[in-house]
Length: 123
Ligand SMILES: [Ca+2]
Image (cartoon, rainbow, N blue to C red; front, side, top):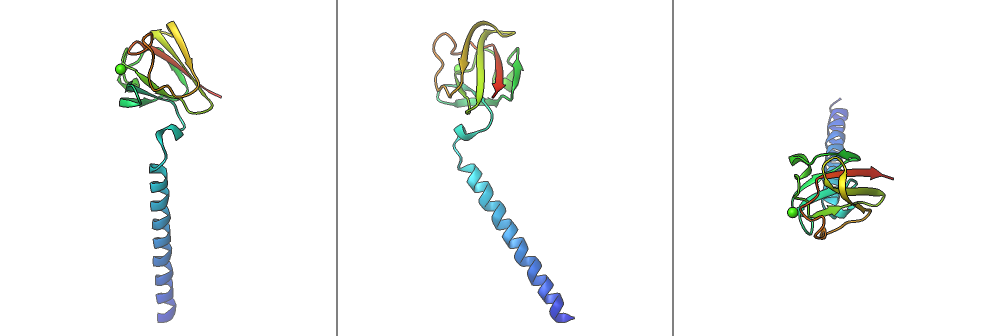
């Protein structure tokens, strides 16, 4: 009786250590991924993917509130492979538009701090 109890106790503790070790390795692996490996497009307040940022899932953003960085503030955009992000200079997907299918570290003068609505598509 005593022997089998101590074996059970040992087995449980060993499994726990394995699980904890596996979890730690996985999270440190994920932390080391560059932001460009993200699965969803992101917009940034400043050039070179700096300042405040927001993740934009597929959909239409007819006005940009704080959850989308804000109106007339976006200066750079990350677009993962397989996504298409269209920027518009006016609310409601109006005004000048710019289609992005790859990261853009610096919007040009026509769009820098002028984006007011966005359409995000996948595939
Ligand atoms: Ca800006």
